[in-house]
Amino acid sequence: MSVSIVTDSTCDLPVPTLQRLSVTAVPFRVIIGDEVYRDGREIDPPTLYDWMSHQGVFPSVSPPDTEDFIEVYKNLLKHSDTIVSIHVSGKLSSTLECAREAVHSLGAEDRVHLIDSGATTAALAEMVAGAALHAQRGLNAEQVCWAAERIRDELHLLYSPASLHWVNRESRLGKTLGLFAKFRRLRPIYTLRNGTVDTAMTCKQNGIIGGMIAQLKERFGQRPIRVVIALASSDSSIESALKDRFLSAGLNLASLRFQLIGPALGVHLGPGSLAICAHPDVQLDPPTSNAVRTPFPSTTAEVPTALPSTFLG
View (tube, rainbow, N blue to C red):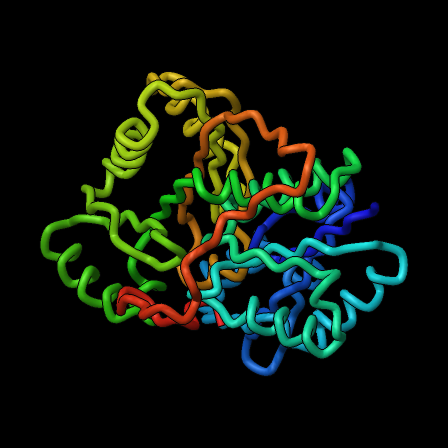
């Protein structure tokens, strides 16, 4: 039984990786004035961050719509038995709802399995990659979903804007933190809990990395963990410094990789921002029979006021 994997471009995986994993990423749209660019196809992160830093560009983002998903699903269902479609948190974006409407429009509820990642950027990427590798092994849709959801349920995502200049435009909490940070010279570290944004802690500007490492130690102890560092920057010197810091931090690292934060989240956090995703290095061999799927909190639950429910569109 063939299983195709679909996600959206907020996973921030580069095109060569998506191609290697046989994953289709439905693009967000990046809007700059009257111009509209498809994320990952017509604009890349370094270009966007250069425009934001040096040309005073204030972009916005818009999620894929129902028609985008209908087109993708119709094409894939011609040669795939089933689709596993994994997307940015339903509490941050309408993306998942558009995917659901597309499935209903096609009458494909029995062939398309939707998963709310409860996350975005590197955390979503880890789920997508895990699902894709299992699909390539020839596992069925239920087993692929089981593997993705096991990663989801263990994930810990932390992120921090380089400054509050960009966050202030989007968030009532961001404005409050901006005033607090200006007075105290502190910088927030955000996390996602059940798919919604919350504040993990605040640190001095030079204490962000130490604060994030302390959070990972508190969460995972000495369990072997896979860590992904996502940057809204392509500066190799920053990547090298972070690599040295994490390798000497006393964490039990099973793996450490880097990726860029893409436009969908980057327009809200700004150039130079940082995200850390970690999850235990668990064996992902799903049951040989139909796997039992783990429910995820409903996207209709009350959303905290930290960020609007349409933070990513």
